[in-house]
Figure 1 (cartoon, rainbow, N blue to C red):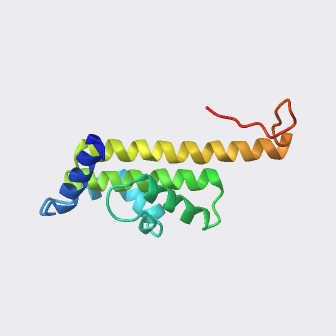
Figure 2: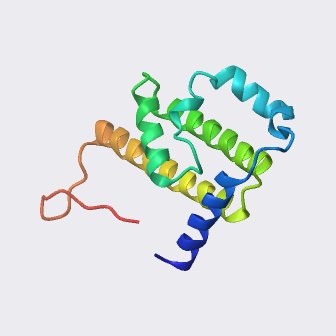
Length: 141
C-alpha cells in the first residue's frame, strides 16, 4: 500500500465516522437539489462511501444496463459522483485527498470508457486496424 493509498484509507474512514450533527448544508445547494430531482432514482446506483475506480466502473455498468447510450451513461455517472462528493465534503467534512482521488478515478474511468467507445465506432466505419504484416495492430498511448 502506497503512502497516498494509506492516507486515503484513513481519510475515508474518518469521513464516514464523522458525526452528522452539522446542518445538512449540501441540500441548500441548488445544484444538489436539481440532481436529486433529476437523478433521485439513480443516486443509489453509486455504492455508499467515497467513489473508487471499482465503484465508478460498477455504477457505469449499471447505467449502461438501464438502456442509456455511452455518452448519457458517462454524463449521469459524472453527476452522481459530483453529488456524492458534495455530500462527503459538506456533510461529512471529507479530507481533500478523498475528493481529489475520487475526481481522478472519475476521469480515468470516463476516459477509458470514451476511448473504448471511439475505438469501436472507428472500427465499425473503417474496420480493424492492421499492421504491415496483416495482423491486428495494437494501439497504445
